Length: 298
Image (cartoon, rainbow, N blue to C red):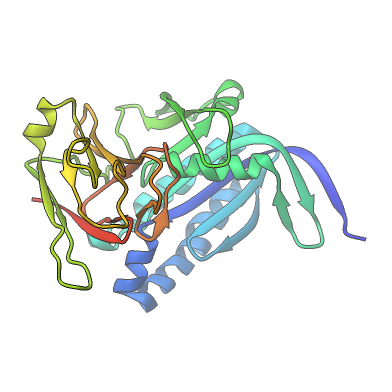
């Protein structure tokens, strides 16, 4: 009979942003660098904070901690180590983790050395709300844990998450000077946002958004098939009438949110949940239905 237990734990879920694109560009080199990250970054940071590495497969890492404080400290340590790891890498080759931290009751399967439960699932959803190179934590973590010197929790607001009935209130870990990410790898959008795409039949779906124009129209643009309801029209059967919204934040960083489209929105091959805001950066491949566009800051 399987040995299954329950206990209250803090969970850290980390996932590499843009992993699919990196593998497509340089498969062997990416696998080698990700292996180095597991050995030189993730394992020492997790074990150094007293945590347990549950599993590390492909582009994701799952770890368990007996205290929320230790989980937050490990998440910060991972991002600091990643900044040093990426220091000599070209910008397009940098590996950036999104990290989510939550605390709750988990189910432990000791025979399979794995953990399950709503707390684990919610940690993954919170990870999806983090910026590339950033950390997001749940309200439960914020209420019982402190950050190390030089960092602070910043209110990230309430978000909808896939398969979660209630809104999820998150907080972001910021450095003392309020930099959005560790190492400052996320660039602000300036000038022109250029989305380039040509489908398999040679049809051009490229479009430009001028940052100055976005600033004048409530800093957002709706993308979809219906000209009456959308600022950017993509006339393709796999694109919904109102498919997604692009938003420019007050500090000129770009976000995308799926508006409940039929065929979904994905970033670098990973489908995003409807209603959940995700950060975009230069080089991201964004797919609306079957239309995949590459974002450039021109």
